[in-house]
Image (cartoon, rainbow, N blue to C red; front, side, top):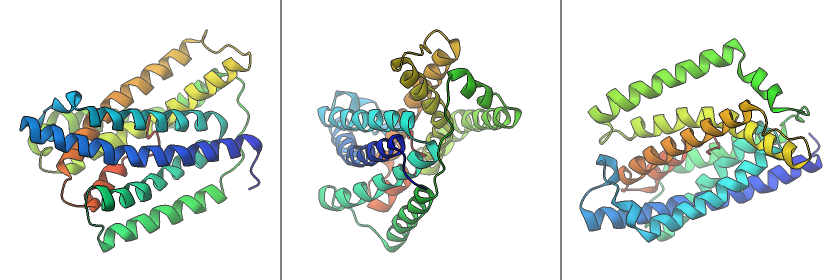
Length: 260
């Protein structure tokens, strides 16, 4: 695949996004630890004292900067190119966790990092050129295909089961519950972020997409996914305080909306 100008812009923005987001996990986790130590109530069991912790907000700002870069990257490059680059944030977090949080990366963690990077490189190298999109309504047409609607319905049902049944029962002891919620919501946010980013790009080019209700619907979905992911990511992060392998599990919820 030869990189077009837009693909190259998306590639660079996705790399910058991974750096900021990888660093934000470390900063936020340190803030979560401070908040838990000060209040005695961890985020993993329902505490929200981290909202008063400046270090947590610094991490949040760093993540927002990374997410903005990631958001813009989706407007320029195909999701299949941008999303895999989120795996690089794992390497950034692993290195910073070793030096800042004194966490230890075990052999399985190293293997996971290598596999993530190798997979990302393979996907990026073979990423296809994106077909031009002239309207948000084109994305809406693709998003309302029966197969995708079936997937969306399945995800929503699974999220409700995890949130209302498994989270109260075993969420505070099994981090896979919280990361599962984040991952499932993240899979929906990728489509919405791509749609919203494309809408704004077309609008700036003179083709106003804000007049279409589909644009605002995608914006609502993005906001819902982000709020849900941030809430349960904080719960997952505070549960994983023993070593960097646990931190890597938390980061892996990013399908790369990530992540937003």
